[in-house]
Every structure is written in structure tokens, then in C-alpha cells.
Amino acid sequence: MNEIVPVISATGLFTPAESISNEELVESFNAYVARFNADHAAEIAAGMVSELAPSSCEFIEKASGIKSRYVMSKAALLDPEIMTPRWPERPDDELSVLAEMGVLAARDALERAGRQASDVDAVLCAASNMQRPYPAMAIEIQAALGIEGFGFDMNVACSSATFGIQTAADFIRAGHARSVLVVSPEICTGHNNMRSRDSHFIFGDVATAVLVEARDLAPADHWEIVGTRLKTVFSNNIRNNFGFLNCATPETIGAPDKLFVQEGRKVFKEVVPMVAAMIAQHSGDLGIDPAGLRRLWLHQANQGMNRLIAQRVLGHEANEDESPTVLDTYGNTSSAGSIIAFHLNNADLAAGDTGVICSFGAGYSAGTVFVRKAA
Image (tube, rainbow, N blue to C red):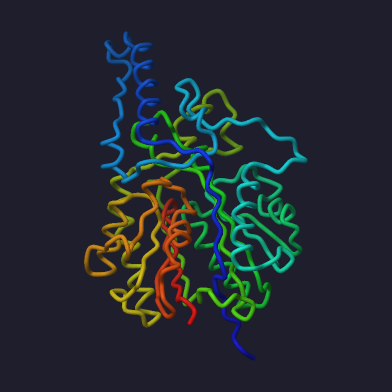
């Protein structure tokens, strides 16, 4: 019996129509800071409340490399009175916001592969935060696309997409499916604390899709999945405590830990060597010289982290061609980041070129997907 080889047939991308520049974000944040400090002037003078510090474009770009980010709800995010996404709640018989984003990305992937929804066997919705506990977002996306088969949600924070790709590849190798959509709709602004100077600039919104199929189904222009590897190490250094057991009491509503919180320096110190070693070891196990990788499509969280990881893997400081960046215009889009980087920066590679899609984030979680352009 011939081995079934999984490949990436195509990827898809949905980018929101609106974006927020650093200048706009800083203006909004500093207006909130000025108002807060004025309203709490007496408590600040008495040492009972800490005075808030303003943000700046220079601070944001130095800390992250981000210059702008796409968002689903610009006006509300920039309103100093709100600073969270807002849109009318949809009735149950309407497509939810997250599913709508996922459907648009999925259709883009299907069109690029020349496929119909009827060709797909399964949908995995792999994202860092779901709009609701149930019904599964994947099943709603599946129904909206008209796909037979099955679907389910999975959450491994910023590594959700790479974990989804391995899961899809495993289904195909085992014969449980021949065509699987891994969809990652991310409204990251919904779990960001826009009132925190340390994180108000980090996240953006987007959706990606990856069509993973058996090689005999794939179009000529596809990517062989050479190998996948997953790793998790428990850490509290990136955390979000929001949940149905603790989000509705007077004591917890609006508490900072019900949004994204992180110990950024600890994350940098611990994740960079872990991910660099993981890529190098997986590359060696596959018989691939890591220094010879044509391109690294890394998770788009922090410019400094990516620079150092790429340098450790390649043995020299990577240029934009070797390790492309989308962080500057998309911000951190959680699980979608490395897929956006791959989607926008793979057409120029030649047959036989090998690269790695790599994610890393809360958990800690990390995933590597080594791919080779079809000959």
C-alpha cells in the first residue's frame, strides 16, 4: 500500500478593511491616560493610586517592531471611553463574526487551490480565542461553506494553526480524510488590554486558512509537508483567566487578568532558546541542514524574538528574504501570524526549496512545519 503524503495545497487570508496606525493608537491611549490621571489626582498625590505613563510611537516600535494593525472594530477601540471591540450582537440564525472571517479566508484558500467546498472532508477551527463555547465555530464554518464531514475547534493559543496542520496531516496519513481546512480566525483585539501601556499596541485581527490534502489531489503548485513537530511546556508567563466560571462576578468583571497578560522579559528569555533549539533539532532529524533553510516563516509576535531565533537557526543574522516580517503592518495576530508570513511570502521560491513554518506562544506551545516546494 502506497504511503499517503499530506501537502499544503493552498492558503487563504482575510484582512479586515480597517487599520490603526501607531499614531492613532497613541493618541487614544494618551487621552485615556490624561483622563485617568486627572480623575485620580488626589489618590495619586496620596500614593494610593499609581500615575499612568503615556505611550509613544517610538516606544511601541522599539518594543515590538509594530507600526500598524488591522482591526474589526476601529472606532470603539480608539474611543477612550470604550477601548474594546464593539458590534451589534447577531441573532443565532446569522453567521457569527468569527465564523464570517473564517469563511472568507477558507474561500480564498479553496479558490487558490481550484477546489470546491464539496471536495473537503473536515474543518478544524484552530484559534486562540473562540467566540463562544458551543456550538463549535468549526461546525458553523463547515455549514456556511456547505462541507460534508466533520469539524471541531482547537485552542493552543499562538500555536493553534501549526497544531491544526499536524492534526490535519495525521488525519490524511491515517486515511480519515483526504482534504482538510485549518481555519484560524483571530479577533485578538478582543482579549487585549487596550488600557495597559505594556500591551495596548500588540494585537491585530485577521483570519487565515490552510488547505491540507493528500498529494494525489493537490494542484501542481503545492508544498509537501516534510515533517511536523509539536511541543508544550507549562508556563504562567502568558495568561488569560477569562472563563465562564469566573467572568460574571462583581469582583472579576473588568479585572486585568481576564485579558491578555504576560511577563514579556521572561517570555523572551525562555521561548527564544526553546524555539531555536526545536527548529534545529527537528531539522537535523529530517536530514536538513538548518543553515540551508531557504526561508523561515516565524510567528509574528516580536521583531527582536524573530531576529534572534533566525540568527541561532541560520548561523547569521537573517535578512528580510530569509525571515520575512508581516508584524509591522498586521501586529501580533496570534496563531495566524506565521501563516500570513507564509501566505504572502512563498510565491518566489523554486521547486525543491525548503522552509519552516514555526509558531510559539502561550502554554508555552510551539510547532514546526517543514515544507518543500513541489518539483
